Length: 281
Ligand code: IPD
Ligand code: CA
Ligand code: CA
Ligand code: CA
Image 1 (cartoon, rainbow, N blue to C red):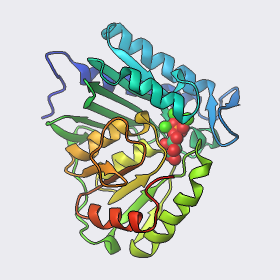
Image 2 (cartoon, helix red, strand yellow):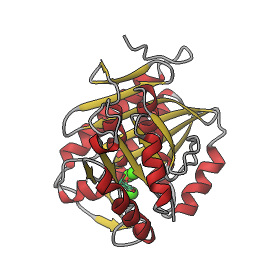
Image 3 (tube, rainbow, N blue to C red):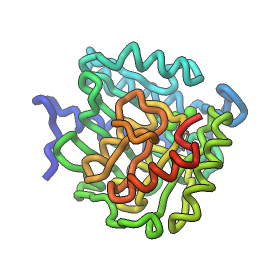
């Protein structure tokens, strides 16, 4: 049975309730988003629902833990530099909540039902709670450091494929990093012939949750931000998988190029990306 408390306080319960509430609200708003604005480019979108979800999440966390820090995507100026700077300023705080109020905004805008709410809690830079909620399937993915990973309350585990040829691998093309496309393409071109198939479904957090649940053998993406990865990375690790950057270095909150797998295919996938010159941009 999962123990949804850390340090005597029910951090995980707050993360779960908050993600569930925000997710339910987002789902109600599907197809009804009033105004859509571009962030950095026409590919990089934000809606009132992203902002409303983030406000809701911030308020709920603040009610329970007024002294904790919160890093949320929509509280940061667009662009990688502002994101990295915001993280740098907060990453050593005692308790830092890392929030993606809608991961998969492009899908949300188009009515493609694959998006999620991602909430992580880090203690002095180390993720101790990770929650990803998919309101479309009502699936809640939860992990606590050292306590395993769960989907809908049941323990989950990464998949058992050992060879890349048996692997289903996901990737993504970051909305705000179109300059990464050449490296994205090199990666896909090198990986596709070696694996069973590739999926690009548009929510990094949910892709990571699917690796943890054994529905994908692995996932890589370059140019992400801390809020896309933090919760999902803990899910994968607690489900028995492996998370590094695309160069094979250990995962930290600052990682932007992520590789997460069932462990067994990690080395082969990492080598494939490295040989293709697709580990970054
Ligand atoms: C995006 C999604 C998408 C990924 C992008 C992210 P957002 O997050 O995770 O799958 O390819 O890199 O930016 O902007 O929808 O929260
Ligand atoms: Ca975004
Ligand atoms: Ca995101
Ligand atoms: Ca988002």
